[in-house]
Length: 152
Image 1: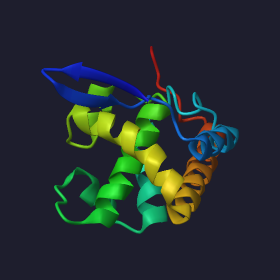
Image 2: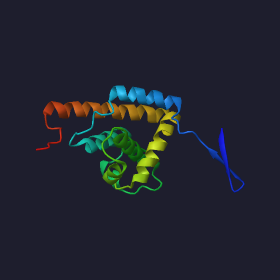
Image 3: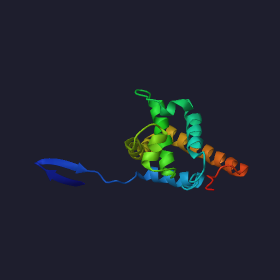
Image 4: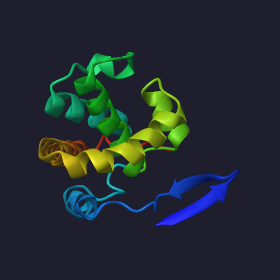
């Protein structure tokens, strides 16, 4: 364990490594939905929000609202934020803005969600189900030929 001393106080420094179970979940997640699958899609934020809202049974309109004390909603929103950032839909600032949050919430989701998935089998299952729903929707959007951002 790494420790450092500063003003005679001892500080513990934890390594920045994902738990092993989380790494397995992300390997499976990338098989379901490759990390670059959503990049460039016109409605990618909406696809993610709708899939998370459906899977976690929360109203879509509540993702931008304050939710102090509502753990079900805050976990769902954190997972949506995490997916949007991890699957490269935008910078931390851009993803935070989409949910009416700042980039600190994106950092918090990036640190918290792997631990939540490690500890909760229910959240693992819902996370993977959400990714499957997103993958299905992106296939439908691409088949309709209206999904790519136009740069004309």
